[in-house]
Image 1 (cartoon, helix red, strand yellow):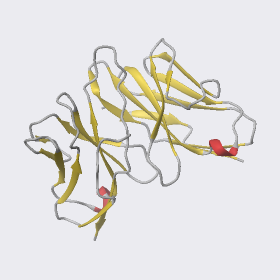
Image 2 (cartoon, rainbow over the protein chains, first blue to last red):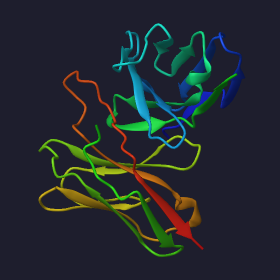
Image 3 (cartoon, rainbow over the protein chains, first blue to last red):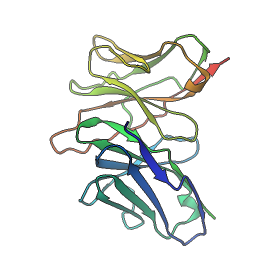
Image 4 (cartoon, chains in turn orange, brown):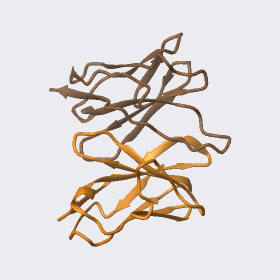
Length: 116
Length: 114
């Protein structure tokens, strides 16, 4: 149980385009979802927290107009990187927690974004 | 900022126990100790968590000192697939409407050798 998927696993796009990454909880209802970013040889950095049906809470320094997060259902959250630039190239990872097990986050496999 | 200190790397022989230490001397009374690991190019995986009692599950054991200022994650019989970065994180329990955040430090790169 407690499986989180992400799609796509890898994406390459041109500078200036937008990219959407999906995060799904497959066997539980995710009341809260989190988006992280990880640059090479660095640790995970939390970007934002989203609760189903409400606006995401962004961490300091993360542009909410550039990284659009939607958590419209209890099993799906999306992260859209708008007008991507090469410096946005990174490993994006989502996680989810449920109301029944709020103290544990289950992570997706990650999405490798490369902006040319 | 991470509230934990871990050695940057450790080695372990396959089949032996891997003991990963973590210092969290400023831990508060209501904060739990969580362990996650991240295999290269994958998302982190939850391992175990505890408050003050020792905990054991199918993956590992967690030993927390009586003063709660440090803990040890034990993988009883390490395999090559246990090679990963192991993160020790302290966090208050979620509740009361507060956002629950995991702050990842640099972790310990455990290399299991054949």
